[in-house]
Image: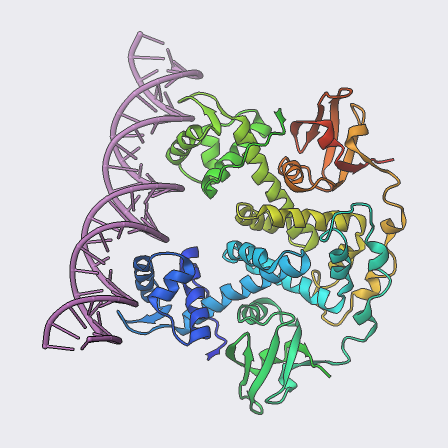
Length: 249
Length: 249
DNA sequence: CATCATCGTTAGATAAGTCTAACAAGATCT
DNA sequence: AGATCTTGTTAGACTTATCTAACGATGATG
């Protein structure tokens, strides 16, 4: 529901970011967000939420009239997705790379999502792009130190020899989403954009290994509508062509 | 100056942890810590430091008489080292693995050091232990996505083939610090301990790739005195034997 | 010795986020 | 309709960390 804009992200306190994130998830899951539910999700009292909502409304992040429907503004949705994307990225790192349980990884991600800088995020994404094309790295690590603690076994023997995906030419099935047709879906492998555009795409939740469904695609200057992580996004063609995917062939 | 104890770490606010860390570093660097210096290092006013010191003194973390010498207690030193170790571990991750500048890596580490859980730390250390024995992984990553952004080059070709260190039997030169003589120094490769002992050793600052100097070592039940990251530590033999190192042969 | 500069402390204010308790507004059920 | 239950809001208090401004103490200098 949101076109990529250049709105500079407003610095915000961690609790307020958490409220936005919570609202975003509740709306996505139930179609609405009530004070009570937000309070429960964040484990605070309803009174506290009420006050927070007033602040968020002042900052133009939520549309909110006393006792009425609570919804995110465009700006709020963007901020929420930004945080949520960081959350998912960190969770994946702790779970898939370091081998932590989903629960522990999520907890850790929660604590860090507010302070992950744009640059660090960028680097982590590149790390995942790298792992995605050469998964034996993770595998090798998963087999050894993250797992049990023998201490004597050596991982490299297992690591180096076969790198299944690498032998396939990765560009073979690779395409940008700009050339996808409505109804098709694919998995992101790489974001080739750099700088602000890259950051904006990442903040929208477009990360390596997330899947994307194309809903509408017009010719020429028309935006491309996609679904990603449950969100509907509109991309310009120039943006779309920077997102490489692989299609289950 | 500290024997490894089983004192349960006290939960503490982030600012207070920062004060401890700052004091620790100032003492290590200049031999003393004044209110003024702490204030400058943390970029707050002296008044604020004064108040914080009172709280730290109440919590038995600093020895502190009004207007007199400021020093960490044993508990305080332990807490400071705990945070500092997290800081260093995270910095290394962002710098060495993700390829960020030393400055950016440090900033990011600062923001995360207070919330890194024991488990996540443990996993990261294992990751480094893994990388230490099979460095081609990092190298390969460093050559590709973290560096420039060609997007088309593929890292794996460079990654898999030669894994220099792996071909050497890592146990060859590997030994525990328990068998080191006074005056010798070595680099940590692995902490084989598990559970609480492992955590305690990590919290003391004993991480993969840190160097250790043995200062005194008695026979039998006597503790082993070492220097690590500028700190003097006493280890029991049972602990020392869990720390594997490589010596520049 | 008197003065002045530096350093540290105290008092009082502010801001953010939380709580409890009391209250108000709808919704539901006889 | 009236009683009651659920939900949300407001008022007031507390905690932590910070600030400014004023004050006190220590030590150096003319």
